[in-house]
Image 1 (cartoon, rainbow, N blue to C red):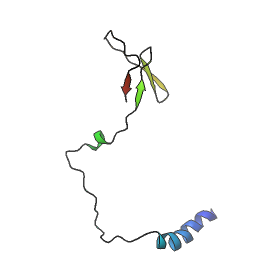
Image 2: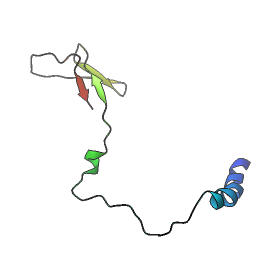
Image 3: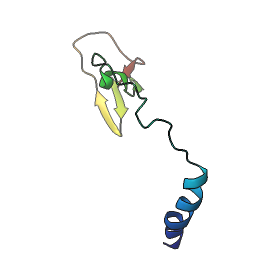
Image 4: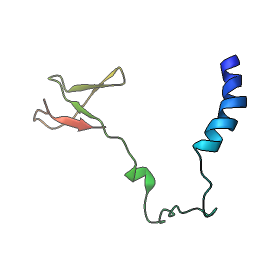
Length: 82
């Protein structure tokens, strides 16, 4: 607790705030707004890939999933995009 008190009451106001920060020239934001036609949810995604096993299963988040399909061809060793 004393280390936290030192950081909050001594180090940050006396050293960090005075030597490692600068004031902005302009207070207005320089960030460009995202255009309305862009879908952020479609752009900022994390893709993961899994390899299909012989029994047409793959694992994700400690769970097994099976792909069922009426097609007669095998999808073994193909990758599925999550």
